[in-house]
Length: 195
Image (cartoon, one colour):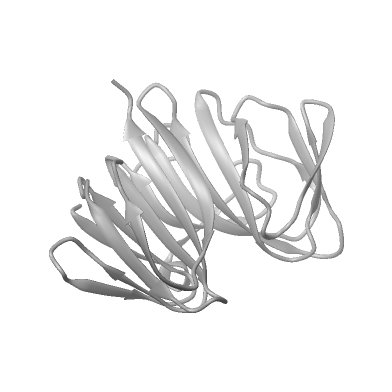
């Protein structure tokens, strides 16, 4: 998997582990893994009603909101709000999490890694012109939420991403150039194998 393209519009539709909705599975490792044995998983989903989150023992999670008004969360009994544009919410798969919709359905983006094998970081990036991205991850995720972005790789090849599309780059420990307009919004994930 030196370069793998992701596309939300062609992603596999999967029922939630707790049966409460449908997720678009953008990528999973190893290929063909299920919800109980994946090493890492990237997905997006529509949340149309409130309720408890599925539990994923041994998994670390990052959750970002892409669209909608937001979520009223309870994380291990503590209130939190999550809105589009906020930094991703980071929590453990064993945590008690429930959500209520603030004002109608929301779309979200999820990155999950099994902590015995992988760790990750997920961040939101808004482009305005060209920006250099240094990559030291074993796998780099670039996901275009809005707009259009070009990614120039170290070998000078160029990949273009539209809304809902992404790239996974394995062992590309180098500098990349991302270019796009001010309205473009990206999510950048760094996945590292545990020593």
